[in-house]
Image (cartoon, rainbow, N blue to C red; front, top):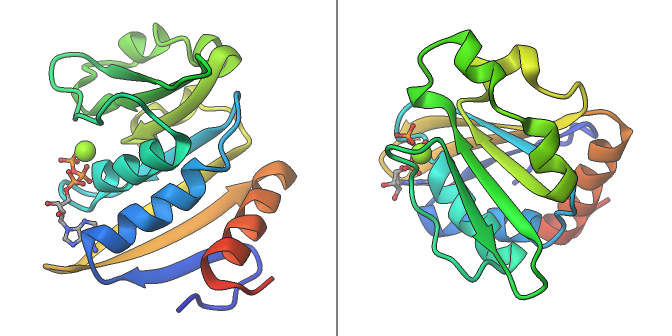
Length: 165
Ligand SMILES: Nc1ncnc2c1ncn2[C@@H]1O[C@H](COP(=O)(O)OP(=O)(O)OP(=O)(O)O)[C@@H](O)[C@H]1O
Ligand SMILES: [Mg+2]
């Protein structure tokens, strides 16, 4: 159950499926220009959540963890794009500066794993998901918003997921 902080969604996910389901609800809401940051240790569930987001968004392509490339791009029938950035393998700040986030946000939505590594180039307004390992099947998911637009998104998501406003 969510803790009743009006500015956040804070709940315990009990399974990968439950995390994916929450991701799906968010994915269905994403528009061009939206940015979602996913912070959490190795194995916290960032990519699992992204799988749900991509599904809810309507991706025709399966989600994979970017291994040698930094950004994956998913498509759907209307030609919109969903970018999935994993900065874990970025070596340096100059390398990060070469990422053109604005370019991606101009034509699609953007999900970022390890966003704290490129904090300096992130837009001020964004949705931020923090995932914490509790035990094998449990994760704490805390969603917070920077900016009114994303605050509104959290409110809609809360209604959709928990039926309360
Ligand atoms: N409640 C849960 N929510 C999400 N994942 C869970 C949960 N319980 C268990 N898991 C498992 O934890 C693992 C999470 O791996 P995932 O690749 O999503 O993590 P990640 O944060 O992307 O890690 P990395 O930093 O290595 O990319 C998966 O094997 C998933 O099945
Ligand atoms: Mg991952």
